[in-house]
Length: 397
Image 1 (cartoon, one colour):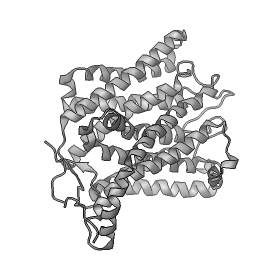
Image 2: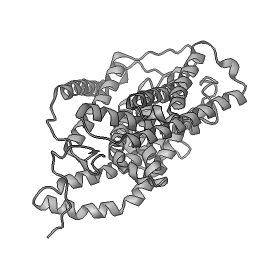
Image 3: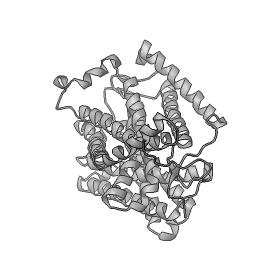
């Protein structure tokens, strides 16, 4: 049985692995400086035909899918009223806050006129017919909601301290918790809106998106894919933190999360296949694009079917492997929709530059680094040995 409370891991922040993360992050920040001062062309292979390159498909569309574990667990814990899964929530929320924040930061980097980003905060200038506007506003609001959900962990850590900061944290903590019903409601509504809108964006490109990917069901497919990926991310991160830091965990909880992941993955695959059949596009399944279509389905359907067996789900190694396959399948679908299956015509071609790849790797490294620091200093993970003091609520005098 794991410990019911979340505790900081403790230990040094600067380790060999964190130094590697810092090196990649530093390289990415140097590229950002060059890009902001000298323009996109100096670090990217973007063009008028491929104005998003790999940054939107990877840093925004895929990263936010990985960060959807907070949404998947919110549906399980708060909507389905399965409170026993709450020990998994803080880690999932932290991952969501990090990935969404980094996705928003990457948008600033690939905007042509990044210095005009402030204009999005001026409602009279809004283009209310723009799906991108909805995505931008929802993502910004969801980032704020996720960090508010992380804030109680910060308050619990501060409450351990003596003095005014500890007293303030102890007084503020219950007030923050009282506002959580509203916060949780927003944390469910906002990702439903913007994840479906990521699919809606491609509805306007019927002549540029391959028929196997272009469908009126794009919003639903993007929503289902993010839910499957989110559940997979919860399993993968929980397994990795267990292996890296020897924390205890409850395999029964992850087994049921695996079943939830399988359900979302099978729902996605069923909708995708039925749509292709109904549209009469089975003949399009040939060549490289047809192979990508089959690989996407295979990466999602195979682990989902295996997870229907209880004995398979109870095996931690199999469950971890299945989560990785589902993450890969969901990421490949999103990446293909925005890039591999997209053809702007007129002879445009694209291959990512070294700068684009390095920036994406550095962005991911920043996310890993923030997560490592947070779990070592804040009560995020459950099942941690009681080597660090457990936060105790105190009352201000």
